[in-house]
Length: 162
Length: 116
Image 1 (spheres, rainbow over the protein chains, first blue to last red):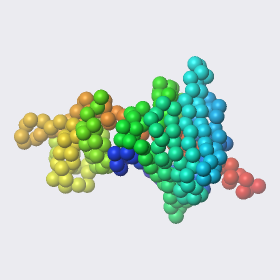
Image 2: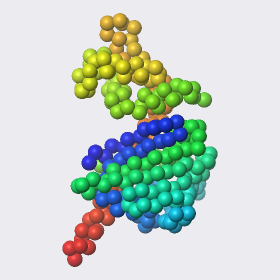
Image 3: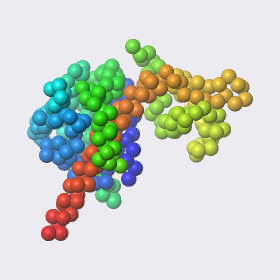
């Protein structure tokens, strides 16, 4: 599958991220909703740990992720509530990032093709255009931006990005 | 602060895959409409229209030469909105590269389990 990440802005308040995976929808869904799996990839850069990763997968249930820099103890968190769960095709949840204004509503659509590959479309709807622009500008993991170069290097050396 | 009208125009301009491809091509140097038409499976007038959208969004500049009017990237725009989107995209690429590795490891594990 073509693994290029496509980022578009369908409207003033939205960001759409599209990516295909070499795995069935059920598995890609699990890797977004089970803490033991989420921990494997939604990690911070090297030098950051993920001390909190809790997910209560039910409508009205909450999730919380916290990353911490081992070096200076800086923390960054994301939390939200599940609004809709249609395993393995669709997941809707709110998302509030530390330091960001308001909440975004995220709709994840997992579409499995006949050959067992899955296209994931993540649509983030922000309360205002300004919140959208800010999210785009600061990136999805605001507090960790400074360490991304190290992550890139890490990925290059481990070859995980290939 | 960024001019929001310009920003909207830039977001719109970037929403099209051909226009994104044109920008990638221009990143390696200026090019005329004719040069840009070759690698893409679209007509010359269509490329001209895409260039107009990119120009109005302030993402590219066209040369003065009436005959050639080579297009080149607007340096300032590249460090603004384009840079944001690209950095944002790269962040997802990094995260998803990790997800790929985790998915592959899990599938290998499941396969092993089934064979047992």
